[in-house]
Length: 164
Image (cartoon, helix red, strand yellow):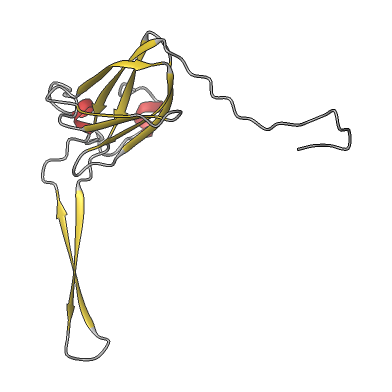
């Protein structure tokens, strides 16, 4: 844009700083079973997508049986990480990847209840039957807290008749 002074010109520009320094990214996929299940297994067979926010390049891998996936040939950049698996909530995070690399823990919460809606039209105009079916997972690897004893005698604790 030219101003009133004929010797001055303003230029608008955008500069994007890019790096060619190599870096690797490891994503470890987890769910509730990682913390409460037998042997603390990671979440297997998760689709992991990593997308550069500066140039738009996208990389996709499967986490495999061990729940780990490594992207070894990335460069320093800002990346969006997106993880998804059937019957789990998705995971999305944005990171600034720096050399030599880093590890991200991706927690995908298990969806243990699902709902199926069925709409059945009937002969009466503007009338429908709506059926809702709930499906619950039978084994839910979450902690169960049992309070023992169920009733506390605070006087007995206060006067030292039982240990705290």
